[in-house]
Image (cartoon, rainbow, N blue to C red; front, side):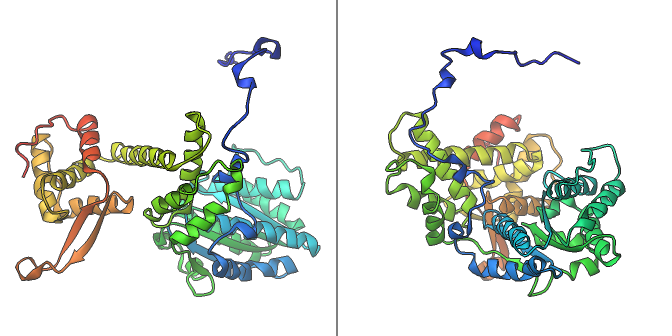
Amino acid sequence: MPDDPIPDITPDDIEGDPMDTYDPSILDTPKLLRPTYVPNMGRIVGRDAELTKLESVLKPAAHGDPPGDAAILSKPGTGKTLCAKNVAGRLRALGQQNDVKVVTSYVNCGEDNTETQTAQTLAASANRQLDAQMDIPTSGISTGQYLKRLWELLDAADSFVVVLDEIDKLGTDANNVIKKLADAESDGKACYTGSIVISNKRSFYEDLDPRVKSRFQNNDTELVFGPYNADQLREILHNRTDAFKDGVLSDDVIPLCAAFAGQQHGDARKAIDLLRAAGKHAEATGKPQVDESDVRAVQKQASTTRERELIVQSLSHAQYVLYAIAYLTRTHSDTSFSTGEIRDVYQDICASEAASPQSHNSVLQHLKNWAEVEITENKHTGGGKARGSYRAHRLVFDPDIIIAVVESETLTNTDTRNLS
């Protein structure tokens, strides 16, 4: 076994170590601002109707009857995961109260993104909750072996409710996981089963068997969470202020965090992340209070970092297309441009880079992809008699930053004099 690269330091070696002193001046209970924190009912804002619907699907399990299935769909930061975890936790507690054994399991399919990994997580979760002490190895056995152990464990349960978060990350394996859970109950291999699937994309349905799809696509089992409005975002943040020491938040911090998050399609996660980062910024700079300047500083940094990563990690032609609309935005009085106008500049960039230009449809697809990650936006416009109807694209991020990133990371020729 290789030596541990981390030095073996004893307590005697760290007497007077600067890390031994810890007295945060701003944050008091930082866990309240962590993305994994699941608040109680009193802290959940603007989701009463969604919670009621989800409760109606699952609560039969707490009374010894079969739970239902549900799909929760919408953009990130709308409370999907938070609500599903909250209801599943209360369901398990109600089962205990009613002497009904309800086993619940949460799977982040972004991490466990294969059928085998999902089956292992489900078996390990059931094993812990049932205190069965069955051997569930982290790897080394087949999907079938994990499921066989899971069915054996579930003999001791009345219901098994599974939350499959980011289910679209499972791809075609999503169909297998949901179908096997449902079939296990109908075939007598397991107790009652119910699945709550969560996705940012409706397209995850495309990979499902029609019989599996029908379990979710109706008014009783499909929930769509809308974006939070500004008032709800402010209330969400007010419900987390006890993460901070008394008196350290200036009055303008929460409204400003909510306003920035409101620009990001009502994303509560971004609002909370921004509030936490502002607190950290104030603490790092030795300030006694978090104010508007801290929020603006971390917002600018976070925005630039996110967009830079999205740009750098994208394909070169996607960057050429983005550079084209950024160039047009910087050099023209207009702010919206047709796909054809952008493609003209894109082709000039390809010529400058000695790259073969892609088709009009490929350019359009790149622009749609940039709109999905909120770097651009687009809409159909009438265009008048001269131009007819066309799709207009608008940049919603700083063109100078985009140009600087693409020129430094991707382009080999940064001379823009020959661009359209």
